[in-house]
Each structure stands twice: as C-alpha cells, then as structure tokens.
Image 1 (cartoon, rainbow, N blue to C red):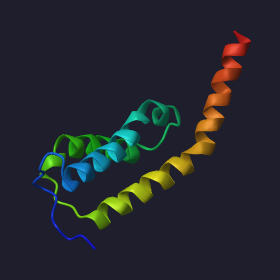
Image 2 (cartoon, rainbow, N blue to C red):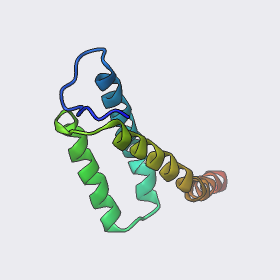
Image 3 (cartoon, rainbow, N blue to C red):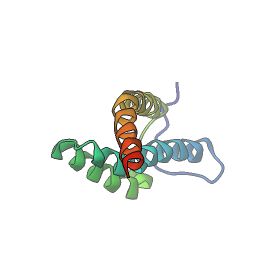
Length: 101
C-alpha cells in the first residue's frame, strides 16, 4: 500500500505516472461534455463538470494517494459504462435525423 503524497512530482517517477492517470480520468470525462449536454442533464451535473475543469487546472496542487487514484479510475469506468445506453439512444436519433434529411 502506497501512502506517499503525490503533490511533488519528479519527472519519470511513479508519481508522474499517477498524475498522468489522474489527468486521463478527468480528461476522459470532460471530453464527453458535448455529448453529455445533448442528454439534457440537470444543472447540478453541469456545475460538477465546471468544478472538474477547475480541478484539472490545479492538478499539480492536489495531494492524493494510489488508493484514491484507483477509486477514481473505477468510478470513471463505471460512469462510462453507465453512459453507454443513453449515448446509444442519442446516437441512433442523430443517425435517424440524418437519414431523413
């Protein structure tokens, strides 16, 4: 179990790899923002995306542990899995609209 804070990153280190993994999780979610907008989610969710963007800008100042990162990676994977059905419905509607034109 790793308990070293990761706020100070040495190039090429395990900490740098963890920061990359953290940034990947955050960017994965943020890249979905246009698609999420089409789902017409509540304002609370849009506020969470805004907060996520702010955290991404300050990622180097966030202290976290491997266990935190693993939970975030699992949560990101679950979030993506839960979006499959809503996204498949919006994509099929977009395809139908294009076919009608």
